[in-house]
Image (cartoon, rainbow over all chains, first blue to last red; front, side, top):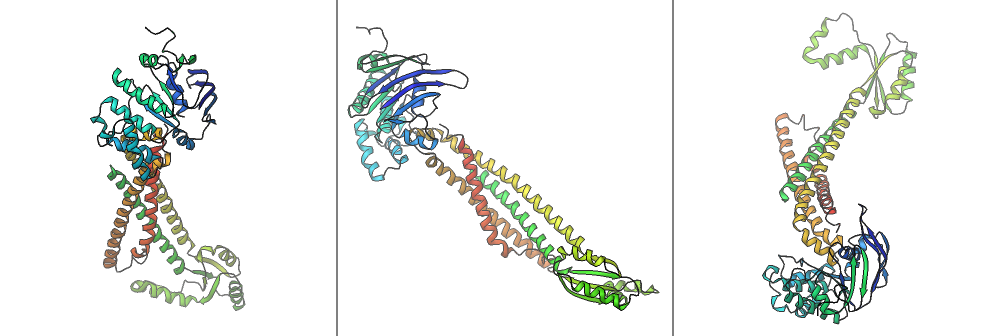
Length: 231
Length: 276
């Protein structure tokens, strides 16, 4: 589903953010991307979202070479990738329903399809009752569930979550992880960048670790760090 | 916010309107002058033989662009002068002899292109001097050219300024919706989808500004024109373009330019925000 071949990213100032990244994520996988701040996690995600260009190497999405994509094609790449951020990024003056519907309007979905699909997705993240509320009336966990709903409403094959639990307490974080697991169970490939040691250790998923821009570990059912987690 | 944009577009178009009316009116003057001063005066040496006169007449008639040629004797010329001087004609009474020469009056198609003809006539035997009004026409044309050039420069500067003002106005709107645009980009909105509403907003500003200035130019000029007509008994308005004749041209021109400036202003302001 996602494939990086010898990816290097160098910024103009001569700073190298990624060295020779080689990895492949299959359809339906749930992968944690771990590493300390500055290890290159965000850079890798930015490359995948075509926010930044690649210095060298090749990148594939759904078997299509997306290393070089003309600017006007970028929106169509992004429609195949749902994104969830640490800070939710909801529109404060739109209701929950509108925040989710908005993502469908942008891609030109039929109003009838929007009216059918938005309630369905909201019930999937257990927010049907909050459809008419505004983001600031919701708790952090609820807001993050709205942003997940928005990310998956167009049914993208891949979901990228950049520290989705970073602003949440452990219980709420667990709730978010159940939603993500649920989405993954329905076949969506998930790549989640995180610092949350407990979550990574408890979920026993594939872990890709970056350190100083290098891929240092790629482990099935791995833990957050190489050390065996506390028993 | 929109008020600044609308005002600046209106101001640009208002000045464009004034320049336009000036240029059109000067063109009228030039055209009219061309028709009025379509004569070349060929002054002759004294006491020429009739064969020489016939020769001049034949040669001139043979030139292209010549409509007619008429002989004017020195006596006729003096009588004409007396007539033209009117009340001051008594000044001519004191003359012992008639100082005016015999002449030919040559009517031509277009005085602007009479230079060759004049040069040919000058070389003919018996011709002392050739006078025509090319100088006046030339000066008028140069003057009209200056007005046109000045107008274009002023309008160019003003268009630039108003694009700048509009782009700043819209930049503020865009900036306040930055978050929304950013989210739209991540969800996969095309640039066209994001730009659309802002461009429509810019065009709307432009059209409102244009409507205002069309009203101002038309009614303002109409007022000026009719008051000039009353006071000066159309001595002056004769050369002015009539307000009715320019209304539709101004409406179309201003509408297009206003909408164009608006759209351009929006595009300029959005460029920076779309690079996500």
